[in-house]
Length: 272
Length: 302
Image 1 (cartoon, rainbow over the protein chains, first blue to last red):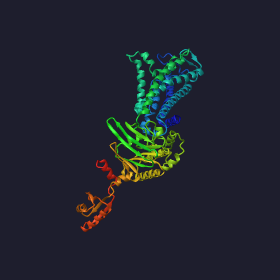
Image 2: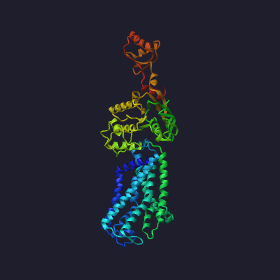
Image 3: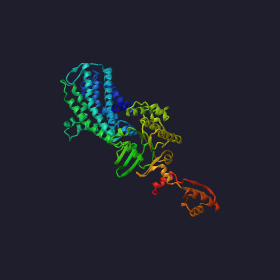
Image 4: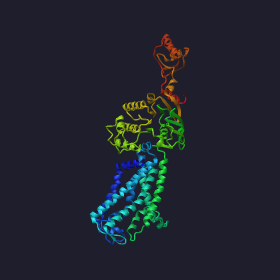
């Protein structure tokens, strides 16, 4: 039953405008980045410029990595929250929970289907972003060997590392989606859930500058910090430590968020 | 004896200090068209939500065919369908796609979709998005969605509210037809005429409490033996009636005289009035309608 419910949750997403808004943002952002790089090419000597930005003109393969870097702050949290924050609250908005909860699928199955659909969307948005980045980068700068923090890798090796980077990035991105689902379930209001998720992401990033905290230790435990963990793949020898830590932190955030949301969804009164 | 389609025992729902449903006990028997009658805000919809497992009672039990819709909604609702308040659908999907989705959630493949769409006369508009449907079309789609489950019990919450007169007539015809096919129907409504036209049994709910449960015929029969008399001189007519043996409970209201009597005593009234030169415009048996009984009960003297 969960499988059927999941298939319909995905179809419902495919029939909604906001789904395409998120996917379009994921597709257009790399194009904007590439245009900006063409208009004002970065200089390798620019102080403080992100590592991969210095090589974006030399190899189009730097573009997807730059996208991951820039998207971490708010773009991808917004893209994820846009749909994950709506997935339960939209049922309250349309008053359709009573329609689907009086059929032959249990509340647990409906909730699992919604989580599955939201995660599917997040992965689809990430895939859109990586494909758009590679295509935009290749058209602007061509496919050339890519400098890493330690060496220079061939285009085929770079593509493999890019795929790995997006996989590692997906872990905390799904963690953020889980938080958005929690807010969506509890607030019963799409806008509140989207804003709440962005605010949570922002607050986690703000711990960097809070003087009362041991900033480095606090950062290690923030979900948003894990959005940078993929960079470990570009060191030689490859350092799996940050990747494993990112997986651990992502699960630590996602599981309680989904558990609380599940309990709330299964037990709540459906009125209105 | 077969299991009751609906059995409520001491059902109660409170929201903070507000008591929405208070100790509701009632039984809907197989084959009933059961009217759940009460003014707006009486607790009808809250009761229905508890029956459908959408909200948990504060106290008491619901059983649908002997099963608890709160503990195990999927099992308890297996032979049940219906809607509370107005039926709600995904506005961005077509009517047909909405039904396809609900059929999938029922574990079926939607083989009855064409049939139920035809039945509610929506087959011509099934390809349109629900966003563009009128209120009446949504009501009909709600009924189609319910019928698709081939239910043995149909819970309908104010199904004719907001429909135009033709829509109301069609919906009532449909309810009659479904009952004729053996489906038990619980019809929540604030329209007394609807209960009179459709139902065999009813419960009257007011301020969350059941004020009457039983046969419609019994309720109206309590007013049997009553007559309404319209005469040229109501005041004198009332006096004369009081003097006739066998005439009881004489009351003059709104220019008519009401009294209770057996058929022979009632017949003697017209004779006596004629002798006294008073014209009889109407002498009508039956007397009180469900509406009058309803107000007697809900306003405290029932």
